Length: 224
Image (tube, rainbow, N blue to C red; front, side, top):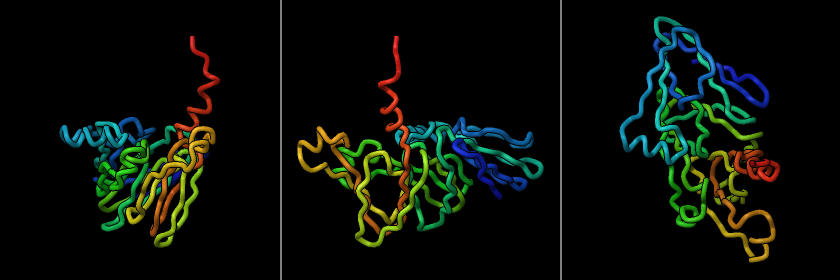
């Protein structure tokens, strides 16, 4: 599979497939394709569908196959930002925020990911239930806004406002800590909890989380 990422604020990824190659995506992500791309919708059983719903994915996924020769298919973002390719390999899993996995090769497995830390489970909100990519192949992640990447050393930490964590390598641990001081929590405007990422490993931070954008524009929405 060969690919090209094009576009500005609303990017797309264009995938060129050899005959018989397959791509899998959440329903609604395909933008255009050649006529020989055949689609099959799968759910994967009740348990699998429930896990997808928890992780923010659609309960059904579409598998596209290049039938009878080479084919082309493209997938588009649903929010202003970036599309980032991720190389998944055995032992090199990657954790993504809910709804971030746009499409992938068939060798990539998408599962629900729970944080092991009690604090993040109780207070983590969006940071608690995430998506885990494993297996082998290329996956494409949808990032809200721009992307900032850091490589954390063993024990090195980054404190992040909730919602700005786009993803991280599976070697990175996540926990949720309470903002210190009652006045800071309730008057600081930064929320009550922060996410703490601890290395080693690569982390992705995004600059325009959808919940933050929705919160910013909500006061200007007139309802009747």
